[in-house]
Length: 362
Image 1 (tube, rainbow, N blue to C red):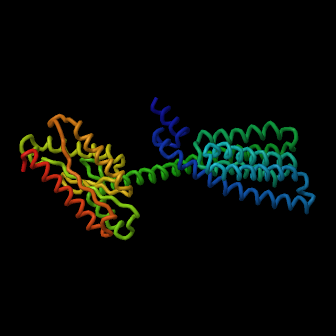
Image 2 (image 1 turned 180 degrees about the vertical axis):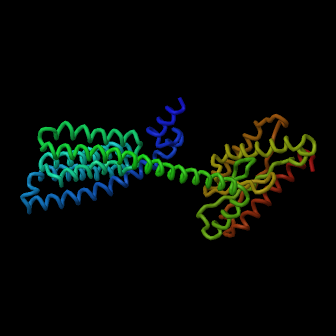
Image 3 (image 1 turned 90 degrees about the vertical axis):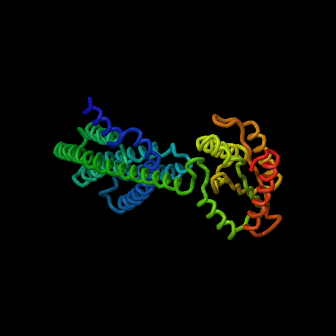
């Protein structure tokens, strides 16, 4: 059973697990699209040269129609390959069209000009389709189709000694091509998997570097870098909101840090729901957050009002409610970003003092 599983994995998924194969499939498809363009252009030039030779030499005249048909097939595949940038579904059909056009041209030349030179060219044509990054099963299918087509079409048309020589060579080259392409494509798929895994790891590391692990919001490092960027290129409209959780120290002291963590996470969730964009919100301290938006002050104030409504309804496992003090400032009040942040911070502390005076806390 394990042997069968291994064979299926090798034939169908280039030696990868199915989930790994699916992970890199789109990248491989895009690579095949680019390869299709390169191969189609190269083969188009080859068929054009062949057509010119057929016009200047009677030895190639019999294959003129084959050259022209193959050139048309290549032009079609070039068109499809470029169109596949917008319509990716065209990649595989265009690739198979190129395969069959190339194989068909090889067979056509073998039938029209049956000598050793053209039989050798037919064998070369078998290798063209396997230059794409393919599953081994697909490669086997292409090679079997080539051998069967040669047997069915060439028998009785090509002289026996040339036919036998060509068939033997085609079988040998097909087997060799399958083996070489199997090893090569497995390595190519593994490189794509390695690249994808490396990219995902980099994203994870970037997430740790710029995101707070408790709240999943952007952290102080991301905040500092964004401030530096905005100092160099201040948006036309800018609103800064400083938000601070009320009573966190009391919660930590009376109910424990699990309750305090619940309060911080609740604040992050309410801010995210109110501002509807985690890329605007930074956790800059233990219970302090900063929201930087490029919207109008009225729109930002609506978000603050929505935040107040959300916190009024919130109830947790350890604590029954949450309160957040906010202060907002805009670049209409100052062109200096540090001054805008300081103004928002001052307004937030005014609201915090009012909260503590009302609730009798310190």
